[in-house]
Length: 433
Ligand code: GDP
Image (cartoon, rainbow, N blue to C red):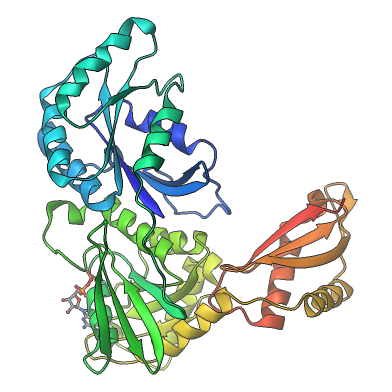
C-alpha cells in the first residue's frame, strides 16, 4: 500500500484537502475510549488503488520557527511517502517557505504533485503559472473548500505511485513491537533476534528507507517490522508523539501480529491505551507484553494483580494473551514465538459453515433473544465472510433488533467454540432478503 504525504506551510489548506480526499471513507469500527481522532492519518482510495494519506501539518514541533516547523514536516514527508502532495496558496504567490520546501523535495527525488489551492474563481486561474518557478513540476489548480480539482490531483498521485514491490514470502509471519518510548521495544527486538537466530536479510525498503528484519526461528519465517525510535535514534522529530504514533500505525498496518509493550514497573499509562486501541482497530492479532518485569517487587499475587489491571484498562482487548518479560535478562522471550504463531493462525482462521451454524443454534437455544428496539431478533444463519480478522455475517429478520449485549454473547460463544485467542473478531448483522 502506497503512502502519500501532504506538505506545505501553515494555512494553505492542507487539512481541507486531506478531508476532501479521505471523504467519509474513514470508518470507525468501534468507538474505543482513549483513541485519538486527530485526523493526520487515514486510508483512502481512488480508481481501485488504496493508499495511506498523512497530513504532516498535524505534526507540530513545539517552540519552533515557521522554517524549523516546515523543515521537520518536509523531512517526515520525504521519509515516509511514496508520493508527496505539495500544497501552496494560489492567492498569495510563491513565498520564501514554499521555495525552501520545493528545494528539499527536489533533492529527495520523490515524485511530487503540486496543488495550487484556493483557486475557487476564474479570476485567480492565471496565478498558477507562477508556480512553475518552484521547479517541482506542473501546478494543478484546486479548491479544497469547493472540492474542485481534487480528482485531478488524485489521478496524478495514482499515476506517480510506484507499483507495490511488496512481494510477501509465503508463510512469513510479520509482526511489530509497539509501545510508548522507553518501554523496551528495541531491547525486546534485540532479545527476539538474539544471535542464535539466523538473520536472513536486512531488507531495505525500495521506496521508503524503512528497514524490516527477516529471520527464521525453528523453521518458521518471521519479519519484524520497523517502528519509530528503533533506528536512527536522535532525529529531532523522533520524539514528537504524533510522529511516533504515525510510525506505529504504519507498522501495525503492515503486521499480522502486534506486540503491545507496557512498562511493568510503571503500569498502564494513558498513551498505552492509544497504542493498544490502534492495534485493536486495525483488526490485527494482539499480544500484550508486560516488560521490565525484573524490576517489579513481587509476591505471589503480583502477576494476577497486573493481569487484572490490564483487563480493566484494556477491556476491548480481552482476547489478547498477556506475557510478562524481561528483555534485559532475556526472560520468557522464547514464549513469544509460539504465541505469535498461534495468534497469527487464529487471525486467519476459517471455520466450517456447518459447525458455525451448529454453534449458533446451540447458542440461541441456551440463551434466546429477547425484545429490543420494538422487535425480537431472529437469526436464520451465519457465514464467515473473511479472515484477518475473522468476520461473521448474521442473516436476521432485522439488524435493528440486535442488542449489543447479545452480540457480545455470540462473540463469546464463537470464541469458546473455535478458539480465537489473540485476534479480534467482527460480527455484522444483516437483513435477509
Ligand atoms: P524503546 O524506546 O521502547 O525502544 O526502549 P529501549 O529498548 O531503548 O529501552 C529503554 C531502557 O529500558 C533502556 O535503558 C533498556 O536497557 C531498559 N530496558 C529495556 N527492557 C528492560 C527490561 O526488561 N528490564 C530492565 N530492567 N530494563 C529494561
